[in-house]
Image (tube, rainbow, N blue to C red):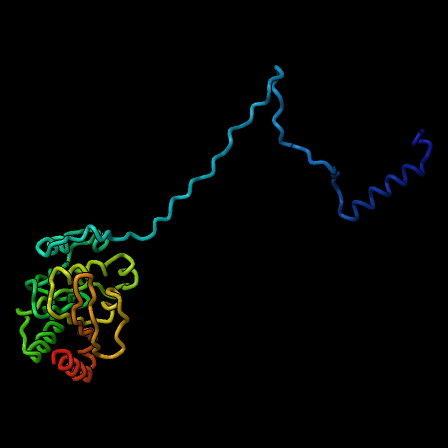
Length: 248
């Protein structure tokens, strides 16, 4: 058919195309998919050479925060203090400002505080908190030289993240420390310490607990931290009453 001799046919075709353009369709579509990026064959008729496949980048494994291996904690008290003062992993690599525990194994009382004081250099609790502890021990009829004194953290750490420290394994360190010191009784100052050894923080100024180990169970008196006792003088009689009940 001579389309040029049929102007109505050309008008219909043009009108149809204009209708589709106005409808927003300005491309040709096929029902069957077509591989537009197909690699052409080689001139010699051999199979086409495909580009090398890209490898997906390997995501680094999420190992999480470092954790302390309990097996790395010394099993003898004589080795514990040097490890406590020098082990980098124990405090994020920092070793400056650490303060050693004091006392001998088998003491009648082991006292554990959350951390050394800011003033401490060679002696644990050498500032105002130490003076309060000496007064408390004097009221109990004891002297500092008679107790084993230790801290849960190796150095003064403002606003410590106790939850992160517990996940790291500092509770295992404290539990091993108490086991090696082997005291008859355990006096703990500070609510941050109790979760490390499987207890809830005390809501009262002083509460009686048990420090349970596989070998034995040690009577424990848990009290508010020494800074809190300095701010709340009315808590001291509560501690005194708890001590009397504990030692009766």
